[in-house]
Image (cartoon, rainbow, N blue to C red; front, side, top):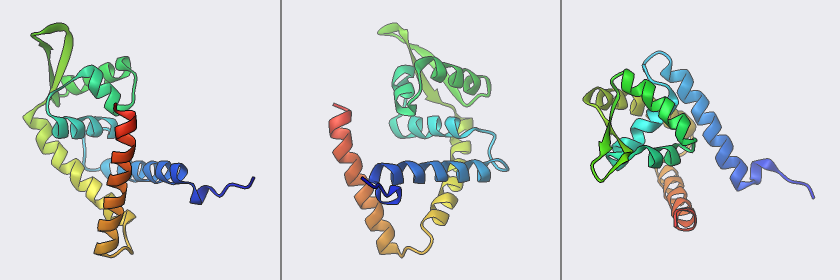
Length: 147
């Protein structure tokens, strides 16, 4: 059976993500003091608020020990702070700092540039439709995966 990768949903989603990530890295080198992984962590913290390390590791799709190392570097850089959960002292909660808020704005601008490049040639209605369809796909999968 012949497969056309450029027509396979999973491949296209992954490849678009890979290309966006590489372009983000290229544009971010000159303007950010954060890695892409650190930017993703801050984006999740901005979206979800304070979260525990295990949940953040899950969101980042990395092992808890890898997330711990990433957060160690971010804490040393003043981007996040961690504190113990009063209800469970083994659990560490992560919070963004004011320094990170400013950096996240720069990261969003880099992301906006990548999106503008990626969506070049699509009119406003096509862009809105693509985003709407992807959000529906995310809902479909999240109801199955995040149960």
